[in-house]
Length: 74
Image (cartoon, rainbow, N blue to C red; front, side, top):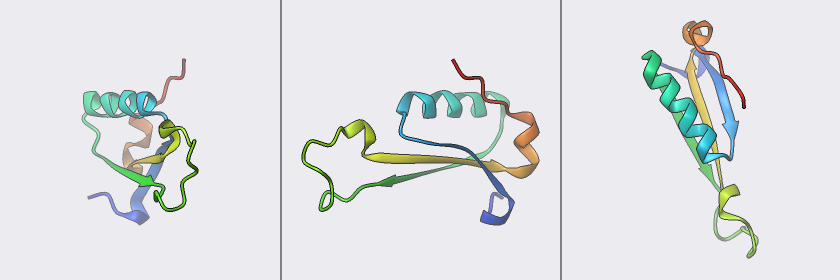
């Protein structure tokens, strides 16, 4: 089980494309993960704010799986 004390963050960002690529790679390797999405409240959002940047995504894996997963950037 992935708990706060035994997890490692592998992604933190706004890109849906990058997030999906990482999740596909984790699924392909059979690595369990936790995805957490933090959105901005509409009460505090700027009217012209780009929706691509309205949600921050975090992906965590178990610390023992860190060596099994390597992110390749374009």
